[in-house]
Length: 496
Ligand SMILES: Cc1ncc(COP(=O)(O)O)c(C=O)c1O
View 1 (tube, helix red, strand yellow):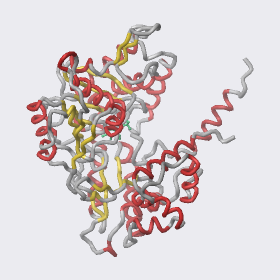
View 2 (cartoon, helix red, strand yellow):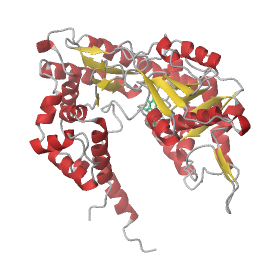
View 3 (cartoon, helix red, strand yellow):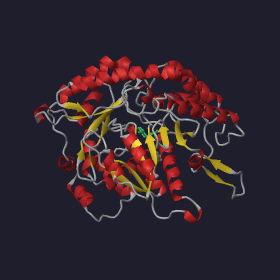
View 4 (cartoon, helix red, strand yellow):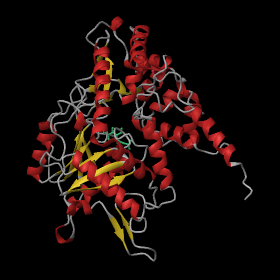
């Protein structure tokens, strides 16, 4: 075959493109990637993916390896998460898919069938800190989203959640822990009350599921808690698998069958899908299967200990920096850092300026916006750090960067909404704040992005993110969401 391009050249180009990516290894990026620091695990995963590369994960009766691997991963997860033989599960493509399916299951169970089927809109109840995947689920599956405010530490009061229980609640979701603040929700109280009211209770342990079993001092949160009906736990986070793997475990076969979609009412092959996709890669499942077998609980525990040491060290270090504070008492290897408002403004360290400054020292932290809750209280702007086993190998350098950056931006005022808006030309800010403006066309949205300086962002993130986050906070959310949609959509539009 005469190829259009030589395979070797194509791979060269890919490797060149990869060099522009944020580094996935080495502990420089403290979000998105979960690096065990063990090169042999990467090799094992690559070998496993290669072995199943042509397999279609759609049909475990034709490709029986898929059923065996999935069964073994589910068994491992069930033991790890305190499940008994009544707990069954599925490997999905990631946290979002696990969360979507938990909601879809609960909605269909709530609706019921036959003469007693419920009509009307079911409600999805959760603390406001619940991962945005649940907002997506409510949007996709037609549930009303009821988000309950949390306190300044990101903790929801169990009684505030329970007070909102009602016949229309199809699912209450709690996190173990939440992504934004590493806050552990009151699983025991909420699950017990949910069971009493006959409401399903999902524990979103996407980030905590594979590490909290090895973390000290965590209150009960898994299937050992009566009333917990489902748990999501991502293999591609602290299971150290390549992206594309999570488990959704459900208590009770009958309830779990509502997760499936099956139809024989078309002229093709019978469809029986436990997950959202039809044809799918078996690669991430094979990689996750290989890695869980390689690590076992002993390996996971060892990696968790490394995360725990680094988390403790970083928490102490950051809490010791005048002008910064870690939010609450993080549970698990992640934390949110905010400006310490108890010190005078000239000694404060704005969390977003700090993150931008840390980047100039070679580490990428994640900026998180402030949020006005439904009771008008405000969760402060924070900077997020996820700590992985590889963090320990760069701990000294990272600590020095965090300290130096804080000194460099101490006293620099946060960018106010007014200042962010003032960066826009007057006619643009007037147009943006017009209350009844019609929805933006793609051309208008692209024009605004150009004015803001964000068009053509395919070169990567702007050097400093604090001004962008301030602008995001200053503009109405629907407008920001529209602009960001345009930004991302245009990244993949053909350029010629
Ligand atoms: C608690 C929690 N739930 C859900 C998700 C969504 O996971 P994913 O990005 O794999 O779709 C995340 C991701 O960080 C998370 O931390």
